[in-house]
Image 1 (cartoon, rainbow, N blue to C red):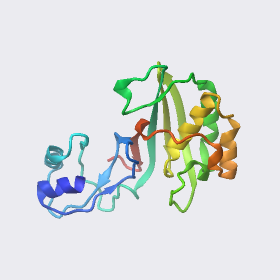
Image 2: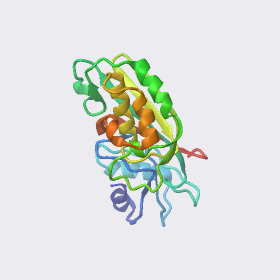
Image 3: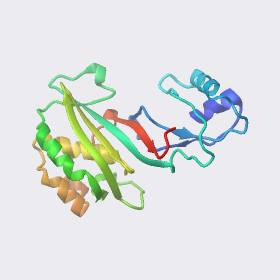
Image 4: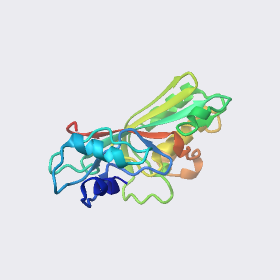
Length: 219
């Protein structure tokens, strides 16, 4: 998509590297991409030009010149995702595309206490999709903050890297703890045994947003 826009605006065929992949239906406020141009172009002009041809559901927020060795994926030191739940008896049509509707009353304290067990370095093989192809499954979760404002429950997760569907499985399991379907000890069991089958459902893609990609130097 961005590659097509670059070709349309400046006539160059480039390879665009994204900081990470997202499942269909997942949103991104802070995705980062990198590419090399043969013909230099002022960042502001490139920003305006690309946004003029990109589809309505995609927009570039900023364009900046990076160091020659910068790579959007391999230079990243972490990512921050937010998962949003609309916790109300009645669905919200306005939030249908950006939040998971959970009708049952949630025990927020139980969710927060269980979420704390996931912070730190662990083997998260029990929290990945069956077709995940990552060779290593140890990850460092730097924080997992769960908050509530009215009917909106948010899960902010920062980690060095993520496995496929990892955040959605974390949230699905924690929600099942919050509505009393699972005991908090299930998280410890999943971390120790890698048994995905004892955990909760994979939360729907619609509630997940990539908020930020972390680099050593600000872009």
